[in-house]
Amino acid sequence: MFAPRPAPDADRAWVRARLLAGAPHLAGDFQRIHARDLRRIGTLYDGRSFDGTLARTLGDTPLTYRVSGRMTRCLGLTYRHLQPLRFEIVVSSTLLFGNFDPADRGVQVVGLDARDRLDALLLVMEHELVHLAELLAFGDSDCAADRFAGIAHGLFGHREHTHRLITPRERAHARGIGVGARVAFEHRGQRHVGVVNRVGRRATVLVPDPKGARYSDGVCYAKFYVPPDALTPADP
Image 1: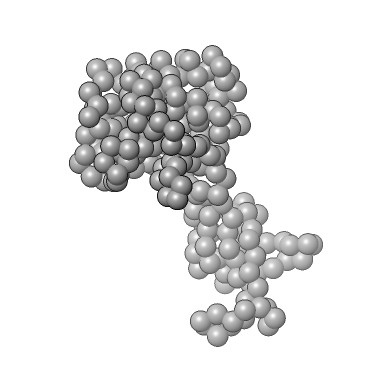
Image 2: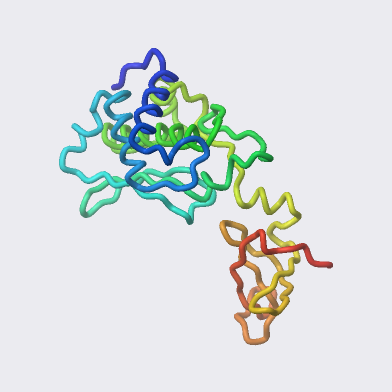
């Protein structure tokens, strides 16, 4: 369907240079991103790596882009919405902005080292555009399948379909805060102690409260959503 590109690194450098010419705020470890930036990246890659096939195949079918602050496990997602038919590519700002601090370990996207946030953004957009291409050409897409791997490697030199970024859960775990851990936090000037039920962009903490909902262990709890950085381990 798509001819292998002889120099995917050169294509990536080409997209990076033209993107920064019109969006200098995306340089290096940028601090803000907009849906229009994702659209610009998609347009550049379509012209450079897909020879305009994506836009021609979409025709009048809408393709939208979105930046999400709620995604904490996936760096990117591609959706096909029905009734009416439209496609959507979403990128996680939480994971982009939660990585690349000077003290962080190195991260990889699609099996390739990402030097900075812009590298990570371009690599995940390549991955999501392959999903879009498969959906348009075949009606389905599975990044764990051989077909996807062949297209992604041929076009972009991707080595894997997974990413190795630092998630909010990993950061919390490094501080001894994970599911089942007893933690303390302050809310409206009062100290609370509870148990972590879930960790994402915010941690869900269950605090014993006779006025709360009853859980399967027979105890009533009030539920709090707390930034993991605001939690401290509590004594058993």
